[in-house]
Image (cartoon, rainbow, N blue to C red; front, side, top):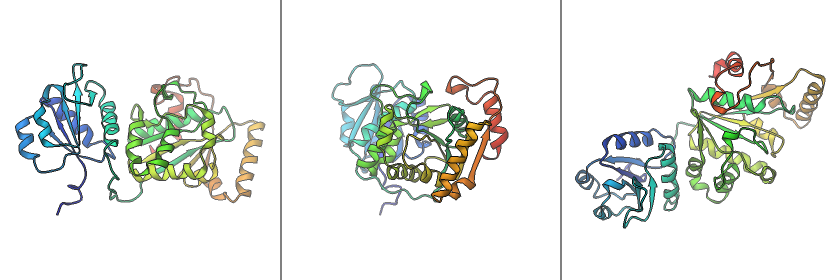
Length: 336
């Protein structure tokens, strides 16, 4: 009888270029949440000797190592790592080899989605994902700057995902390009293909420094159509993938169900200002939460009134340096 590990799908990476094979296979083995076991080879005879009995889900082979003989292994799908820019004869599908490993892997996952059935459940040590909600009824208070900076600082030591729920995100690096999926597509895939949610998530991830993020919703009005139950289900599924230690949510009034989202958070941070207008808004907000029995959210809320910063970062790569980062380190150093 095969053990649990042996019953998982098998991906074989074959490339006569030893350095690439070693680096790429190590990258995939250390990437959280992938559905495959990874076997890597640099010699065709060794490949045939060791892999002639087991079902191969995907065979990923470099263009320079490809031969029609590999079809005798009868993999469910063959993907050629294209090196020349030309289509390999008799090979239907290819991925550009000379991209960042992260991009190559996302393309491989997209190809795998075409053949994957229901994925086997993973046995984990329990839900360890911590949710941090950042929300304020006071606007233009550097909430997104705080959220991104905190996410990038956490990502230096912890697996961290940043989610932005603004109708129009003001950070250019985070915006999705034409044809790319965004957060609304992730909700869609959760509704129509929940068994493969973890794979869909991985195909959408982008990275700044060590921090992962899903591109914010491109068209702000789409935020209003997603129900609070869908948001809660999304967060539950992200937690079940066991990919992240922290999920930072940059929340706004554009979405439904903010009180319930804040209720599941381990920490809630609220940025405000020290002026009469801000104090009135905070009072209204807290009274509303108490009226609707969200006292527990108010009790765990940590409020921040920022000092006047000399410099506000412009690009996402700058967020871990300067006054804002130093302020967060001084206030929240125990979780970093």
